[in-house]
Image 1 (spheres, rainbow, N blue to C red):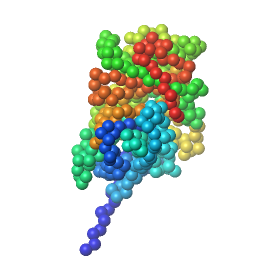
Image 2 (image 1 turned 90 degrees about the vertical axis):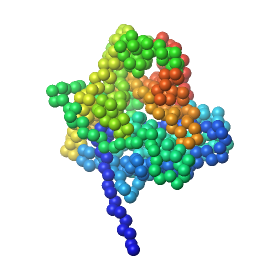
Image 3 (image 1 turned 60 degrees about the vertical axis):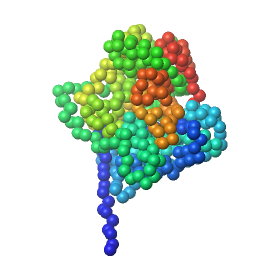
Image 4 (image 1 turned 45 degrees about the vertical axis):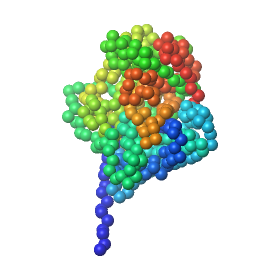
Length: 464
C-alpha cells in the first residue's frame, strides 16, 4: 500500500500591519555559561541544534520561514513540509577564562556572534534567516559562549527573550527525557497581529515627532552624524540607589523608569552643553522604545515587533535650565501619550508613508525620501532609552545552569542607553543592582555629571 504524503500547507504571517517592517536589522547578544561542575558533556552542540529545530518546527514556524513582498505588504511565509531552519555554527578556542571573559566584556561580536547578512528585506533578498546561533567551546571545557542574532522585524526584545527561554526549556526537557515529543513552554507563543481598528478614533489627530521624513541614502549611515568617536560606558545602580530613585519618583509623581530616564537625559544633556556651549539653541531629543502589547490589549506572548518609539524635544539650553522634576514629567508625558488611539495612529502614519514611497517608486517619482526613526537622524543631542530589566534574560537555562553574564550589544550611535539586568536581577527583583550601558561621544566623561557620577561610570573597551 502506497501512502501519499500530506499536502503542503502554507502559512502567512504579516509583518506590515504592526511596526515590524521598520526594523529591518539584526540584534545580537552574547551569553556566557560556566561549567562549574566540570561535566564532560556540557551544552553539547547536537542537543542545542536538536532542541532548536524542535522549537521552530513545532511552535515557531515563522522563524523557519521566508520573507515575501507583495505590493505594499511584507509577509513571513512558512510551510508544513519545508523549513528554513536557523543556522547554528560552532568553534573551539584554546584560551583561558580570563581571555574569554575579556572578549565577551568587549563585545567582540566578530569572534563570538554569527555573522548575519543584510537585514534589508527586498525581493532579491528573500532567504534572510530569522535567527542565527554560534556555540563557542573551550578546549578546557570550562565554559560555553552562545552568540545569538535575530531579525528585529519578526521579534522585539520581549518576544526574543521568550523565544530564548522556550528554546532553553525544550533543551532542558530533552536532557531529562531524550525521546520526548511534547513540551511545556514557559511562554507559549501566539502569532497573527490582531485587528485593532476598533481603537481608531477619527475625531483625534496626532503628530508623530518620533519619525522623520529624510533622505534615506544620507541617513542610513548616520549612526555617528557628528563624526565624533562613539564609546561605551557602564553605570551600576545599586539596590540602595534604586530605592532612593523609587522614593524620588513617588515624590515627583512618575514611575521608576521615567525617573531613571530623566536622569540619563539631563545628565547627558548638561555634559554636552558644558563641552560645547554653542549647541545650546539646538534640539535635545529624548526617545524611548515602548512595548505596546498591553496598551493594544494583545497577548504578552505575541511574537511580533510592536515597538513604539515615543519622543519629546526641547533645546539643549532648556533641558539644562529645567530642574529634574520637570524633565521627569517631560519623559512621563511622552510615554503616557501612547494610548491605543495613538498607537493605531502611528501604524496608520507608517503605512501611509510606506504606500506613498512604493507608489513614487512605481511611477518613477522616487526622491529618496523615507520614513525613519528620528534617533537615527543627525541631531546635536539625542538620548534614546530602552529597558530590558524585566525580560527573563537570566532564566535562559538549557539544563546546565543559568548564564553567568549576558552582554547586550554595543550600539555605535550616540545617546543610546540600555537599562539592563544583572544576574541577580531575576523577575524584576528590586534586591539586585541594575546596569545601564551608555553610548556617547568620547569627549564626554560621565563621571563629571553630578547626576551620573554616583553610578560609578566605567568606560568600556569595545571591539567593533
